[in-house]
Length: 328
Image (cartoon, rainbow, N blue to C red; front, side):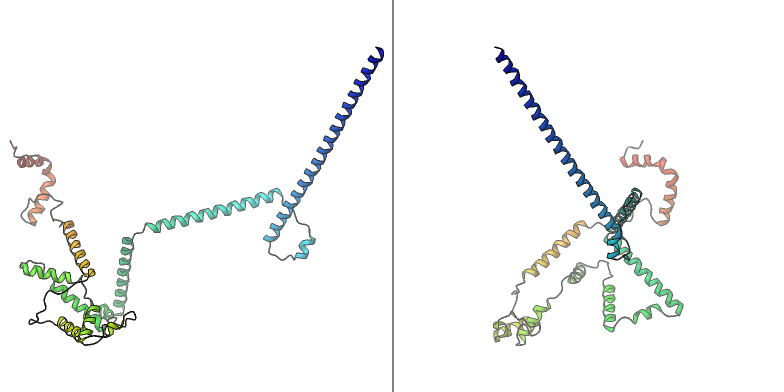
């Protein structure tokens, strides 16, 4: 029994001793690992700090004028920026950023102001510019003792002058706005509509060329896409083209015109435009703002206007009662 009791304490003691040794070994291993990690962290931090200092030195060297050679820069130590220098550089960068933002904002405001100028404003400014130019030329000519109109007429050719005189004569003939009769009004309307319809000179020249026995493109221009049928003109086509080109009172050809789709569309669009214009037309009356006419001539109109300044506040209700028929 005693031997058994002595063997049990010795076994437990050995177990405790083994466990304590194992714990010590584990603690030592943990301490060694922590120390190794600390050393690696310190080395990484030092390497990062050296890298940052090298980058700062490169930025400073690139910002300089470049008088220092590569050999001298390699031998000389790179100065480290102090905290004050870093703050000054940061303030300078912020100042540049603020100036750039201000310039962008000013440019944006200028573009928005230009976009507000409409085509009507641009036309008005152009008219004002031309008027100012005309007045300046007139003043310069008067200082030199020259006639402005005579000096200006030297810039026009004879053809332009003839066209201008024809335009003035046509405008003078059409200046008669009085109503004479229905035939005269219809003629005026017809002449006015002719200004919107220009003659088809290409079709006319083709018809004229066929009537003369030539090809269709001889008077218009060469058409490389046309076939051989266009170059050959038969006698029958020539005879019909001649009769259609110059018809007289003795011709038997009537009602055989076949207008193209484009010509029909032009006529229809012109009719629709006239209908729309007539529906929107509204002539402004001279007395529209004044209301009812209470005068018989211009002198009476001025007199009534003066009287109304003082007595309208008393007579308005009376006149309204008379118009309603409820006067007392």
